Length: 245
Image (cartoon, rainbow, N blue to C red):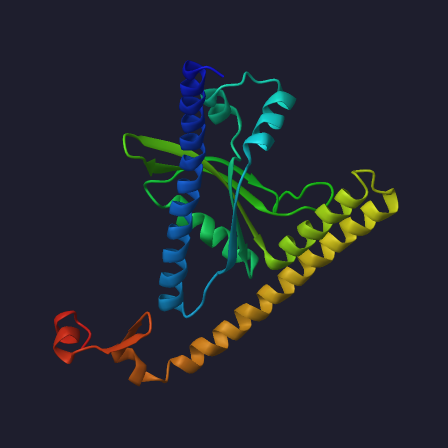
């Protein structure tokens, strides 16, 4: 390889690296947003709607396979325009209502742009798959420019995530040729997972109502706030100024 070819290869490698880094930074920024939402919600409501999160960055090889499969021209602008799931974020919640609560909180943030919604909870796939899919653009600030980067966000309950994970493993084992009997059993299992979600949501609502009734009598905690692991007593003068005393 000549010196000129070597330099061209280095430039191309750097360009591809920066392209992939933008998606990695988008996931980092998105994860920070979720951490803020989790902490704030925990402080205000003594409850965290997010059980856990998992991010995923497609490999260049996987991106190329998808581009060839779809018949798109191979260039970085073409990849950015046509492959919308290079960066993926999965958010797992306890309850169905949490899914839409988190979706609303994300969509209310002015720097995020909602591109597409696919609601497989209200409209499940024929195999029983349920999840809320969002395509969201998030700004990423590089050293010399700002990039609008697309992130695919999947929000689902623990039961939905458990079913989807096992369904994927079964399909992988059978190399997509799953017997009809097992397909029906998978669909039945998906329906059972939905019934469990609805039952646990009802129980959660009833327990929350009981707790709220019990908390109404504990006036001593009203003059205290907790930030991270620190507890602060609110001064009476501050409460009076703000109309709280």
